[in-house]
Image 1 (spheres, rainbow, N blue to C red):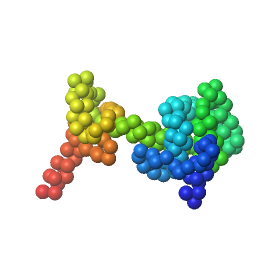
Image 2: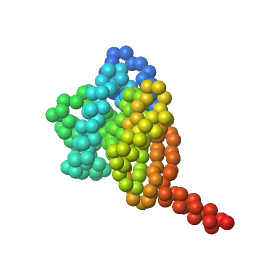
Image 3: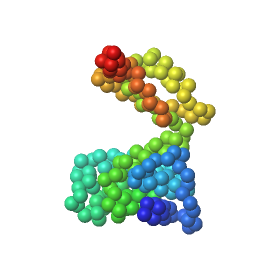
Image 4: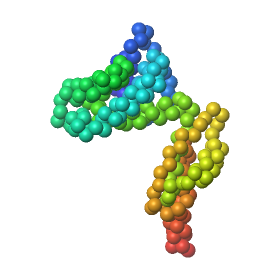
Length: 207
């Protein structure tokens, strides 16, 4: 069933005369949203419009976050045809590619418009991997100052392979008390003060 759905998506996304296999995505993204994103990446890659479609996904993302639009698109009681027209009308002024229009159409026809945001996120991850970017998320109790941020970037480069670059996302969370939590690629390191205290407390209780 999943293979049939994916095949239908590819046929609708691709406007090339010769139907070929999916272009292999740089990373594997799972779930329903991942399958749509994979089909989108393949169609955009075949037509050499990856960068253009990525920009258009930003426009779609902004559109579905608009309260007036989301109240229609995310409402299960609104007809699919109305949802589809609402999004198409919203994108009309931007003159987006047929690939993006087809994505909206397929999501609408399949009753999947509520996962549009997830599809965009998954596609964004593929594009980052396509550019050789390694997404790194760093959480600290307080925002890092410029010197510490520079030192962190130097340290993180040690995780990279040739041709890769860091795409750093930083955020602060006072709840971790101190230290930091780092997620880079498939690696996760919790060096927060909160976790250290929890481990110490557990150790004391066990002794």
